[in-house]
Every structure is written in structure tokens, then in C-alpha cells.
Image 1 (cartoon, helix red, strand yellow):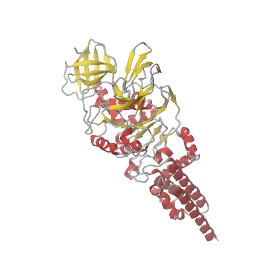
Image 2: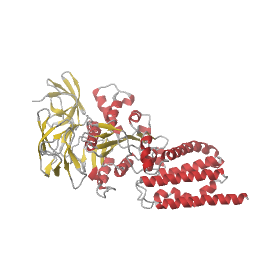
Image 3: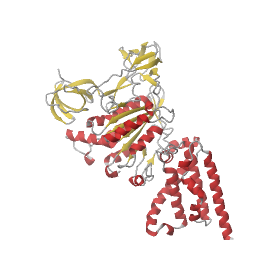
Length: 585
């Protein structure tokens, strides 16, 4: 017998009359096809349900059944290397759901298990009771659920088992006998608990100079990447997924165009992991929810993704979550809110947009997990503001909850300058926390050099407006030098092609060498101009062209060439001073 019957329906939102008890955020099965939904409002004997699948054909009178649990996903060792929809149901390579209308799809694959505990051991919540050694993926831990603890009654011998096989039996503290498998379920809207939140300590190193050296993201931090159409958000997200030093990548395509997401599904599985030489998919989970998929599932997809990220964080891993894009998620919120008849806020978004964004971004953290390990979850969310307007609500509210803001600029993208991160629209709040990292790597002058680069770029923006009026040659020599040095910073350091065979990735040592070389050029140039050497003569030295091209010409295995270039540059400036002295005589 049905727990409720539909009385009203509008797209993915329906109302149902009931005499039984429903709970907020409880999963529900709708209609004869048992479509998956979630209770989002309760008003007396009427419940409101948002449905995560196509509701075509539903009508008043159809049954609604309570699932008895919150909307949850199954977390286990089979997640890595696969592609899922917004509710963690597997997709085939064509993007089709294998079994629509099913909440919990069992994974039939068997994985090699080795126990970590023995009979009689006490197992606290969230503890490790075994390891899974997949030949095609990262070594993973079998965790007891965070809400379960007790004494081990039995544990399986080493061998191969599927995810639902009973691996460990616990005599729980409340007297209940609990059977544990390699996987367990967890509600997507409830953050997984941790033992302790820790301060940011080291960076999530991306290999992109403009991010690592100017606007670094701490491991366990939150970054927003807003940009208009064509500014390179998706390419930069994929570049970070490939090159950042995270153990696990969770990539969620939330409401993106189908063709664009199809490109991700086609290309990402073919990428090679630069650290191991094996396929990148072995440490990646892709959650695909395109714009033509049910809008309610889009709303749930980022919670699903962050829950998967927390699961791997709880195993003591460094996890990076790429969300592309949170604007499409906010549009789903707006559509559902409109169907519910809620009063709209800014730009039609619901009044709770800000709190929902906070719920998502605050789940990023650097933590000590319940099993005693240290792990982190870093979130990088792309934002697609209409007409590249950074004052629109999603961008504005997101800015309040992130540590790093990487503003992508249409002008730089149109000039074919990538990454198109605008240095004057971006910032990082992790500078002091990461100073120690650069000092340990032999670069104690990093904060001062970083500030010098940003000051030059800001001065360049001011002087270029003046130069357009009076001409660049009419500027004083010191101001012409500012323009030359800012051009060098932009061309030699900030520009970096994701498709370059040499410069697609830049290690910390290479970034330090390039930064110090440019800083030395600036010092020598300022001294030369102070000694009445013209900017035209400085621009004419052949080593300047080598500095401009050093990112493309000096690879990771040729760092000694930076020292040779520095010596050549010093000699070039010495010649300029000698020539100036001869002319004066």
C-alpha cells in the first residue's frame, strides 16, 4: 500500500497527500516506476517531493512510498575510475544510466581484501578495518561508518569479495549486532564527521605559475573560478585535475552543455597520470550531470560529489573536487524554488542561495580524521556569471566563502593569453600560511617578489591608459621601464599553455628559478635607468628575448640553464654600463 498519493505535479516537483509519517530529506519512490525523489517540505498531511528523474507520465493518484532513509549514496572501493550521474548511479560511456529508477545499484565486481583488525579488537567510529588493493586504482581503506562502533566479533580472511559481502561483524556499544561490508551508505546532505579541523599548512600545488606563485590555494582550502563564456574555465579545471598534487580527483560536471561534457567523458579517461604513467582515471571519479538531465538531480549532484570527496579524505588522502559549474547548480535551485512558489530574492534566486553555497564550500577542510590520519578536501568551483558580471548573486555570495578568487578575464582570453586569470581581479588569503612552504623550498623572498610582480601589473594598467593618450614614447624613462618589466612578468611568467609539451606543468623549483631571474632583471634594469641607460637599449639586449621565451624553451630537466641565462644577463647589463661610461667620456 502506498504511503501517499500524488495530488499535484509540476515538472520535477510534486505534492502528495498522506496519513503516514514522512521526514525532511527522506528519500521517496514515486509512481509505478519507483522514480527516486526527496522530501523537501512537509505541511500537515501534505508532503512536497522533488524527483530526480524524468517525471513524464506521472499523474495525480500515483503512489509515493517513503524509503525510510535520507537521500544517500553508497561509498566503497569501486568508485574510482568510473563515471556516475548526479546521484552516483553508474553511467555507461554513452552517458546513459544503466538502471534508472533504482536507488542502490550493487557493484558485482570483486576486490582483493586484507584485514586490518582481529576478533576482540575495539573498532571506534570511522576506523579502518581492512585494505583493498586494486591493481587498477589507488590503495583504499575499508572504513566503519562514522555512526558505528563496537567490538569485532568476526572478520573475513584475506581474499576477494564484492562490496556488499559481510567482511566484519561488530557487537555494537548499544547491544546491536552490525554487519559491515567494504562499502557503506551515507546521506549526501550531512557532512561526514572528523576528529579535528586543522589549520592550512601546505599548498595544493597545481603546476600553474599564476596560481601557485601569485594566488596559491592551501590544501583543504576553497577556490572560486568565475569567468564568462570562452575564458577557459573547463580547460583550466581539467589542467588542475591532471597536474595538481592531490591523491584523488572528483570531477563534477553540473549542468554543463552536453557536447562539452561529452568531450570531458571522452578525453579525461584517456589522459595519463604524470606521476605514475598510468591512466589518470585510476584516481578519478567523474560525476556527469548535463543540462538536459533532470534539473533536480543537478541540485543534488554537488552534494553527492562532496560526499565522495569526504569519503576519500577520511581515508587520509588529499582530495581535490572540481565543480563545473556552481552557476548551473544555482539555476536549478532557482527553477525548483519557482515551482514551489517561494518568494524570489536577487535575480530570482531563492533567499537561501547564500546559505546553500556556504553548506557546500564549508565542507572543504584540512582535518584529522576519525581513524587518526590527516587528510584534506579542497574545492575548486567554477562560476559562470551572465555577461561576465562578477557582481551577480552567485559570484558575490561565493566570494564570501572561498579563500582564493581566480577571476578569469574575457579580454585576456580574447588576446589568447592563458590561463586567463586576471591578476588585478584575483586574490588569495593563504599567503601567510604558505610562506613557510616557499621558504623550505629555498625561496624566502617569495612574498616580496610576489608583491613586486602584482605592483608592476597594477602600475602597468594605470600607465597604459595614459600611454593611449600621449603615446608610449612620451612617457618618462622610469615609466617606460615599468611597462617593459610588467610585459616581461606577463609574457614570461604568467602565460602558460596547457597544450605545450614543455610548459604545461611548472614545478616549484622551476617557478622559483623563473621568479628570481625576472626579479634580478628588474633590479638590474632599475639600476641601469638610474645610470641614464635608456629603456630602448635595455629592450635591445638579446637575453630579454630568452627571458620572454624561457617557459617554452627551458624544461624541467634543464634547470641549470637558468643559471647560465642569469650569467648572460648580468654580462649584458655590464656591457651596457661600460658602453654608457665610454660614451660619457
